[in-house]
Image 1 (spheres, helix red, strand yellow):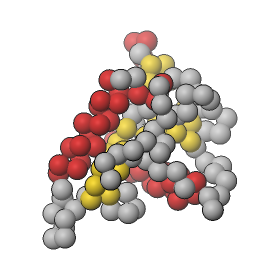
Image 2 (cartoon, rainbow, N blue to C red; image 1 turned 90 degrees about the vertical axis):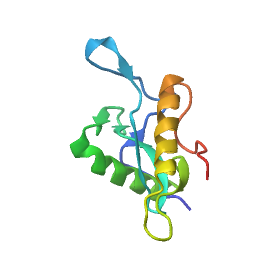
Image 3 (cartoon, rainbow, N blue to C red; image 1 turned 180 degrees about the vertical axis):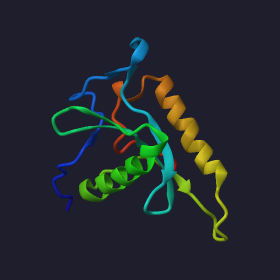
Image 4 (cartoon, helix red, strand yellow; image 1 turned 180 degrees about the horizontal axis):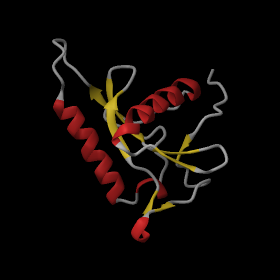
Length: 128
């Protein structure tokens, strides 16, 4: 059974407003494509929100590892999953670049279609 999560949460269009960036653009999420705890390629947000709705920007390269760790903790605690795109490595430990590329292409396509303003990333199917 999933436990109650008290940490930061991904963008939820029913609860959060897009974050305004310099130049007037708005952001709901910026996805990273990384390796999950189960060895799969997965997309996860690098923009999170506190329980009070304040944005927590982990989009910088320095904060990306924190965002990945947070995503794995969130999945473990809530039972909710971010999209998966197949194994990260083959049996010989060689990186399966096509799965990383698929994750990256999917993230870009999601952004082009309005990103999280239309649908939460949580439990969105990948290709697994």
